[in-house]
Image (cartoon, rainbow, N blue to C red; front, top):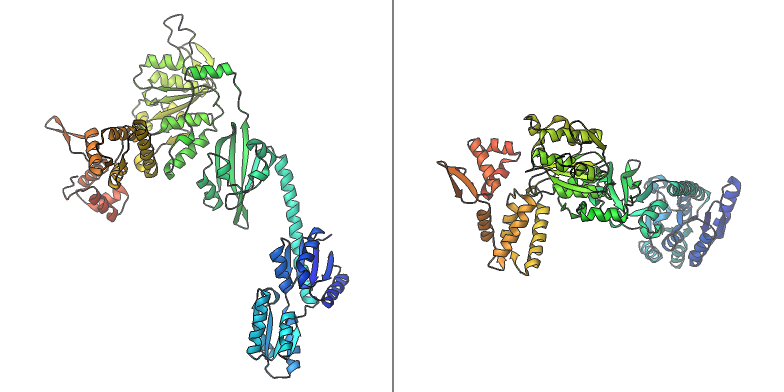
Length: 637
């Protein structure tokens, strides 16, 4: 069966269609003449018998489209057919330049732009999309005193009542043939799509990877068996949902960047129901137009099940990472990109180096990387290298300090965290000998217990953090170059809060609520007070913000905290100290951004062009900054 059915309004048209089909061998399932009153039930009956395409014309085609989901091909009168009708109309009235009205539905006619010149007539078309408007069009044509009316049943009836000559809009073999050819192409395309969908379903269900198909709105339109098993949700419950609703941790902005063509791919590493997966999203292009996207998931490894006693031991000793990516404030674009990079690095076993100022989320990102890696079920040990002698560093990291027999077999952090992660804070503080031993431990996976004895092979991932420019320390000869390049392969730079206004605002709100709840207090910030907090430099980042908010709440004397109080407290807690005649003096608080701007102005002797060039801003923006921070012509703040 072809799945094509032809429904026509008159029997003689149906008979002409049957003759055409028999003569030219078209594959058509059924041809019937149907009264308009029965067209919906007949169309639905045809669909239940297997029809996927219905050929119809005029009002009948419109009704079928409106009340069924079947594909409808319109029979459109060809220019030749309409030209024959126009010539017949001229003969009916025997006039040199008759006014002829063609009344019908929008979907019935081909172009008639040049008919007046070709046939020496005044052709007026009255097109409509409803039966009621057809009657109105016929009445209008009659009122405009047309000579002939060409149309369907409604128009013909109105013409006869007005005693105006009329012709029925006959469809001949030409228009029926064109409709059949269009229907065959549509049927072929539908069959190709069915075959493609069947192949796609078979490929999806037999794939070793999880696959999800998204539409251009980021909604799930198809998925395979593996994803159903992974989510523990049926396909029917997944389809129609936004991918960001289904997968926690997926970045919706990155999804949209692929769907709108800004990025070619989006890849990351996440966990779904405790299963570690790497996913890749790529757009589906149809003739250079994006038609959705494919999201493929590679299940990296089943989660390792540790014995309850081992897990309990890890928790008792504190060898666990409690932070995760959803704990990180990343409303800003800068921090969102930083977190996305960390998610990708979670796939790897290589060392990670995290740069960031004091108080940024370096340690939290390190914990999140561990918790989203395959090492999640193994120990996580955090060590700060500052204020430790080289001997203490050696004992803590390598367990190699052997004063007594009791110490001889103790493992250091690298041995204890085997198959897990060691986070080294302030890694630049490592002694030179420890730098070498750490290099060997990472590069060769060998734990050196002392200078002549190799103790064991290890597999501990190193995540190092620093608030220094490590390369400058390398150039000064204070840090091993080989260890630097080993660590710096996968590096992350955490942006400071002053460059992340959205995150700073969120942190202030969260900390205010936390402290107010803790002390059962009620205070609100005025607009200028909030602006003062958002403008401040915050050298200590989140640590400084959190401690400042607590101090501010505890010492506030009014319900409404204004900008004057905020500025005074900032000046008291973080004063600017200057040395004059060898004596340190506390001066009035100055915003660090204003201080930096004043120094650059001084450096260039007040030349705003040079200052703007150094800062990478326009002169207008520079002037706004000078006004904002109250910088005078002497460059004082």
